Image (cartoon, rainbow, N blue to C red; front, side, top):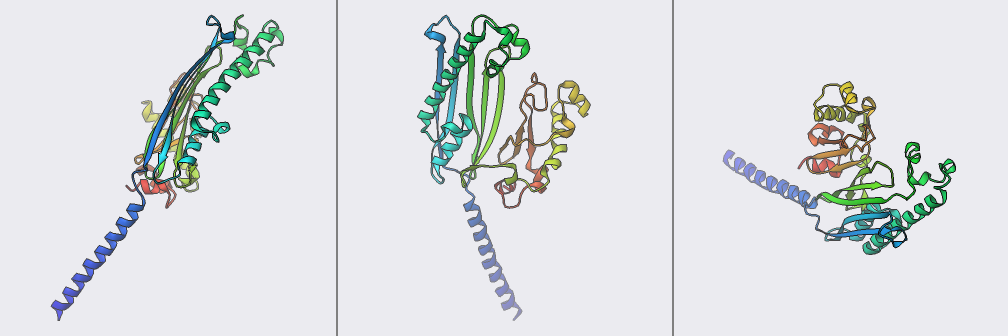
Length: 301
């Protein structure tokens, strides 16, 4: 009798194990690694001389746009619109990719020509030019040394794919421009596209309430370690500021390893320093992740 009972329990255990394994496989199959995305890249370079004279100042645009051309399992059209909106602006996301890039380049040249006209009209009257030249982004110090000939402009924009798995695409947009004067300005913008919804992910989609303050010491410690110092005061001596009150800034990337925040130059550090990048592994923040979110699933892979 006992032998029959043991055999019955043994077979039941096998059936139960098979059922649980099957359920686990079905759950995992719903969270596919491959997004089925084919990317394409459009590269353009535009140079325009004032009055079409090669001896005059010019504007120079370099743009490298990588975008999802087709997606097997998700809506490729909505994904393309998100990429256009984040790289070249919301005014262009309803156009085809080629139309959007061409239109952006055309507007860049037209804006340069308009700035040059403003400059030409107001340059002889430097005492009254401060209000008129606001759009040229010149400091008072730079305006006092304005040359007789207008400045050359340049702009460089590119985006790159950082992570493309499990229903998300993390990508980064870098933009450098100079509108006259001595300094160029660089901006790094990070985005995470949720392919299921066709929308960009926000911090609230990732973290539970109260995450901002909870992340502060983690960000601070990462800055200390990355700069080989032991105190916030030493960071400030290097050119950082406001570190005691630092908070996550919504400028993040996601991978299966963790979350990376980028703080642009001038945000919590002097512009002369490199833009700080803070990598936070999932093991450090698992308790802060919103249950059932994509990131929560990634952290358990």
